[in-house]
Structure formats: structure tokens, C-alpha cells
Length: 70
Length: 70
Image (cartoon, rainbow over all chains, first blue to last red; front, top):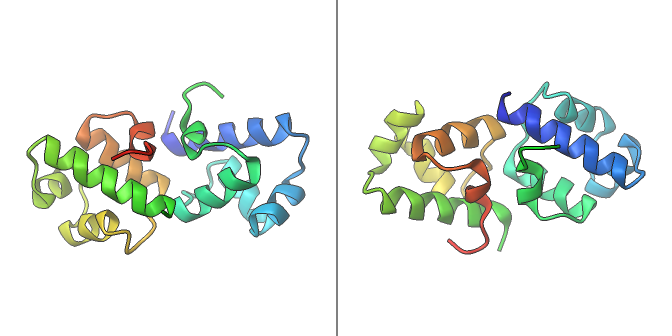
């Protein structure tokens, strides 16, 4: 599995575990909902700055986005 | 410290600990040397795909690039 696929799965799992919609995460991270969707589906390769905003919005250490098991 | 600054420091420290020049890391990761320099100095925000190539070239888990202490 490519790393961006693992990161996308981790973001989706963390988001769902917090009961957040893509729209709510997008608002919290100041990103577009469609962009959150693309990252979760590994359709693009998010930058460090974007990952930082997503991790902050999910209240996790950025390293958790790279965990091997989602 | 912004996350990209921490990641840049970690990459520089890991590269130096392996005795690699920026040129050597760039070759191993199939990136430009100037791009490695920009990432290390946090002048740009690398993407997940680029971080994966750098982690592979440094032979570390991508999570290690996000350690809080370089």
C-alpha cells in the first residue's frame, strides 16, 4: 500500500471515530470538503502543512496519521 | 515550531547521521538536490509522496520524520 493510501485511511478512521463528517473536518481544518475527500481516497498527496491542519483538527499527533494499521 | 520545520530538521539529522550529502539523498530519492535543501530548510511543504521517497532513501519508517526531537 502506498503511504498516501495509508494516511487517507487513517484520516478517515480517525474522523469517523470522532463522529465528524467530511464537512465538519473541512471546516475545522479550514480546507474544502472535496479536498478532504480526495486525501481520504488517496487521489492526491497532501502536503505537510495540510497534514498539520488535519492533525490539529482531529486533535492527534501528526505521527498518528502515519500509523500502519488504520 | 511549525511541523514542516520539525520534519526538515529530522530529515537533515537523519541524512547527516548516515553520512549522506544532499546530493546523495537526492539521487537515492530521485529528487533534485535543491528540493532536498528547501525541504530541510522548511522553505516548502513536501507532499506525502515525497516524504515516502525520502523515508525509503533514509531507510526509516515515515513516522520517524515527524519525531518531535530531531
